[in-house]
Length: 205
Ligand SMILES: C[S@@+](CC[C@H](N)C(=O)[O-])C[C@H]1O[C@@H](n2cnc3c(N)ncnc32)[C@H](O)[C@@H]1O
Image (cartoon, rainbow, N blue to C red; front, top):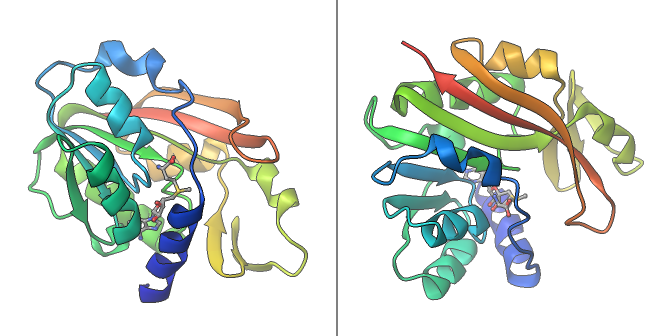
């Protein structure tokens, strides 16, 4: 994992983007005093946006120290935490209202993906939400030639692993949650348009 965080350090040194509006439709689900955590925040576009909307208790998390350095420089009010989410989430049970995971849950094998989602369930409060976006299955055809299939819907495209989802497998991974929304979306942030599955799941009692 050490090498992977260095890979992301390099990406974050050389790449900038911006918030693309995807969270707007969920703002009414959030309450002012919610405890919010962003997993795999990168430059924390989502966290910064939520802070602009008046939310205060936000922790932006990543395992790329380079990304977190930029986040801290740009926004002194945002809390940051450096950890590898594949090793678990360092939060107490039932302690978080909202988890944001934008383009950060699609790098893990089946077992680790389910483990992270179980961890999300553990740390969310009842009626808390996890809101995110992941690669849709259609993105498989855009993988570089020479990418290697490791498991169903999980590939190694040097130097990183990538997972792809359809609605059915999202429902399976999040089977302990109540589905608020799963929708296919297109994102134009990168050179080529990207097809994503956006999801919002509620931890029900
Ligand atoms: C495609 S970027 C998305 C960044 C940001 N959420 C955004 O949408 O701009 C994926 C992020 O996930 C982080 N990441 C990947 N694997 C991780 C892991 N095991 N633990 C913590 N963060 C991880 C990377 O460092 C990177 O910042």
